[in-house]
Length: 180
Image 1 (cartoon, rainbow, N blue to C red):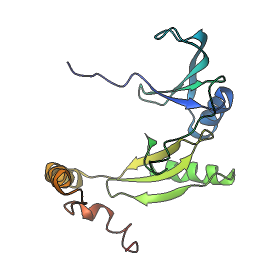
Image 2: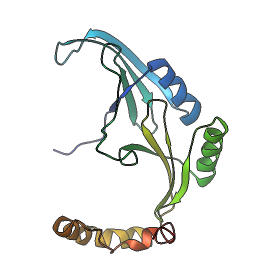
Image 3: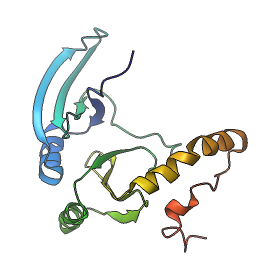
């Protein structure tokens, strides 16, 4: 068996309507579908919900559940806020910069543009507290080849030492030049 694609990815939201409107405004996602039930079809548990689906482009679907009878949503406090995120690809650096400017104009804090050599990114949070990344591909066949050549060596070294292998340190050498 081989997975053909991700059907959808689902997260919790605080307010379904606000979430749809925010993703339409800032990320131009179309609102595809909504359904709601008082009982969960898979578990039969009584747990009223609104389930919304947004078109994230390229056949990708981002979904959210609003759960009004559950305790207020939180996040894994043992994981740094920068770790768990949803990354979306955009078509150009100009698009990346345009979205960044629109977000900042509305008072939304944006980190970046961060240069990962193979791609450049910005990072920000949606109104539910989910960290989002927009990335534009800046790779070349040569850069992709160099990264692919060391992936297994890096993974195996990490598995043994739990220290960052330096095989691909070139990818962030400019970004991290002043971090040490």
